[in-house]
Image (cartoon, rainbow, N blue to C red; front, side, top):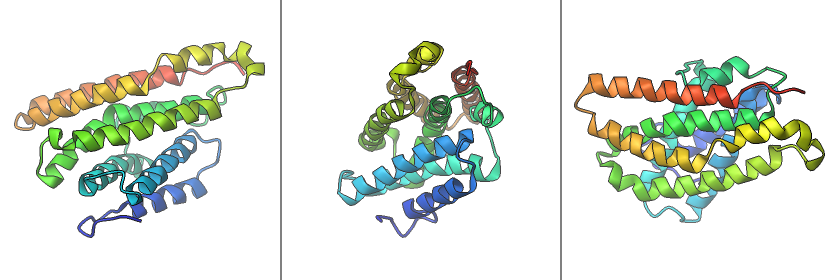
Length: 224
């Protein structure tokens, strides 16, 4: 697997930790559902990295690792910002479907964590967000393609359409493409505010709360 020696955490390490979580968590647990999705994303990222799909490998790896570290902090250490709390609170609720768990995790990770990971990466590499835009878009394209697969795999079949109507409404109201666009704007704003720590902290808290509110809506329990 591709990695750069100067990183204390590599893509290989990230994948190993996600696999350990998969082995430890009950399969129906909401966090386990998201972890399987994210593990598939990270493995696909690593395959594309090996194939040379990311011209700036250093930027791509740094962004991927800084991004993953924020999720692993939640999953391993129970350090949960507001955006992750709905998923942790509802992870065993019998009225929440696997697709809802997957999308709630994606919402928290893309809507909040990715913006902060872009800033982390800029600090690590001493660069500007504009220098990461190409790699950000390539990672985003991978996520969008996997979101489509997730919806196909976890959406109920045609025989369940009647009871799935509320689910169709819920998941249709959220778009990864819109979330990705908003995240890039948030990352640029946070980078511009880096010399105003009080304002940056307030902006981050509001972003966290807004993403958490969206996650709570995605996790609305549905009739079984």
